[in-house]
Image (tube, rainbow, N blue to C red; front, side):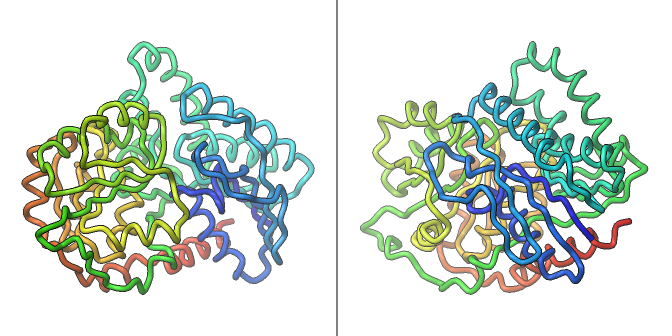
Length: 386
């Protein structure tokens, strides 16, 4: 069986899409009689982070081909140019190839659309892995005039794409109602995000900053964009806690300049560039609290951030500004984690004061959501699709 895997991100890139797809391909590699052709991009998630990668790699039954994208930041026009390049070059790479199945993992719809195009041309089944509802979320992150013109076109693309799929996996159960109402003919599964091997068996390190003389350390790591809304919460929140806490924000994204401008007069917050996963784990272990935030947009009430899983695996206290499904998930699944409504600095302070600043045993959570086990089951569902 020959499977085409389409993913805009793949190792060694630093993002949830890369980690998820890499883990899945590792499980597909173990499947008997399976060949996998991965078409992806050169590392590009953050302009400020470079990681070497080859244009083509072959590892047993896995071939990885990476497309070079134009230099870009995180603006909308840059992203459009990047996706256009990926789309055009991917079609060229697979034009003369034969496949038995097309798998596409997508958050912004267009990789899924590419998968639909290829599966139609090759006349093979399409398996989609959906990490976000793009058409549902654009109304919250783009100007209303832009949405007015784009939404009819994007809705048509969405309908074509998801109607083409034989199987759709949804990363969050919060997506369920949206998809089942619109695309009832597809088969569905819910192989969620999980905990990668790097985050298993971590030491239960207590931070030395817990002494009364030193500020406790709150760490955020990840994208700094409109979706995360850090610029709408951190300046107010950092002002509220004063010298009791020091904030370390690790990452990059389209809203980093705005965040930078808004915290220039705050001595208790530092902005750091993206780091590799080994360094990231060290940052987590040296934290007193791990911080997560999504902007106050209706579309984000359906999502389940992958960050929850790696945060939880550290045993560190978690402070999360989320609502909807993510809030319900954290409350029911993650111990010593407090939730506040997005953008509410007073609620964030109250939630912070409820946390126990100590290591928490989350072995049951880790066993339930180990990424390897989830991706093994997902790979089984892919190779059995006919």
